[in-house]
Image: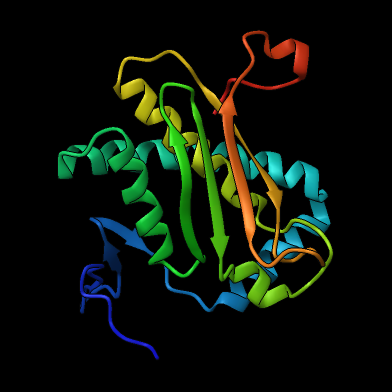
Length: 189
């Protein structure tokens, strides 16, 4: 059963055709169009390089979005992260469920059900939702910075419903090491 989500207002400017949600201009495209473009870029660059590019872009976007939404709605801490997961879930990417979050430790675990990538690509035997990883660390780091914490995080996809033995995707957020050179981790977002 499909129903409207009045808590997610979509405004369409009748003169320009611009779609807006949460005061942000949006693009409305078919899922297959986005996924086909995503796969084409992945094939051209290689999955590892493309994942790195998307991580940094997603990190910056999530930080900015969480900062603006926290200010607009008077949210802080875990409430910002939950608001972000709710909004991502309402935009067709999949259903994002925070299984655990510990701001003091800089950790979170997110489950992804009904992935748009898996719906489009099916069981391809590998993790396909790496595009989301930077989103989780960007959101976490913005929340930490707003609390005055210097701790920064790294997120990774640990499983995908596109893999044979899994029905859901899972992502883990953890603190960056104190020496990023020792592990090859980057503090840049």
